[in-house]
Image 1 (cartoon, one colour):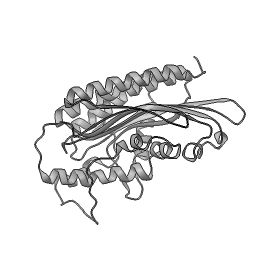
Image 2: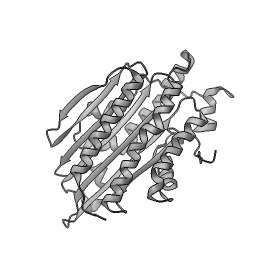
Image 3: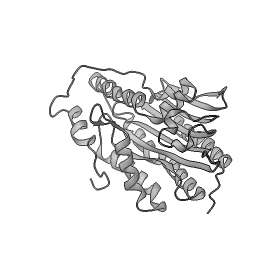
Image 4: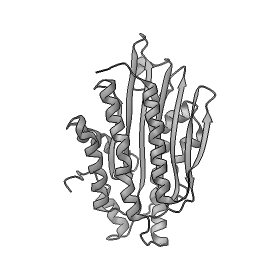
Length: 304
């Protein structure tokens, strides 16, 4: 089992993953994604793939980045003080899809690789990533399907990974100031290197490859569901929670901004139409209230 990292192999996989996901989403939407390659003056660059005002996707991005620097930013070194001040290299694919139809959930997925050295000159590397689903009008079959695909992607690498990564996702994508989950979860992992490079890389690939299996069938089922202004209004209100999480808590957003990343690419996760209201609450017994009572509380969806 190799423990020496191979960044070139990771980069090749990530670029292929980006292409595969974009092609699949274009086939659902019918409109091509914009391709925008960019360079970072401090080192590295990336390829942003973006769609706005599509037939199905109101706004979405599937971004690849490969950046490096001479000193870790605070968001990356806070939990690893032994790495502070060391050169680093990071690469990943990150996506957020905001469909127009309120019955089609927003989705986020990210897989990434990070490598640096300790103050003693020892190699330090890890993988991170995951995916999570954010419905506005929940459907139990959709949510269960999403969690089942996440489970199956991790199963070959140990029975303990899925419950561990699901719990991590539930805890990470939680708005503490609202005491409320952002969505219905999925899986999340970070700083993963415990299985050696080859096995850890294989696990990350399995998670990345599972995205289309988890999300594309849901998008295709929900994209043509009839809706009206009420549903669009609630969608815009709930999108506000997405913005709050990404700008206050999300480590990837903070790392990108603090490390001099490309702002347009980092903030592509923001939804295009958002609303906030003062102390708004859904009507009791309404479909909007069901999101709060039946979907946002953490639960074992595979047993539901």
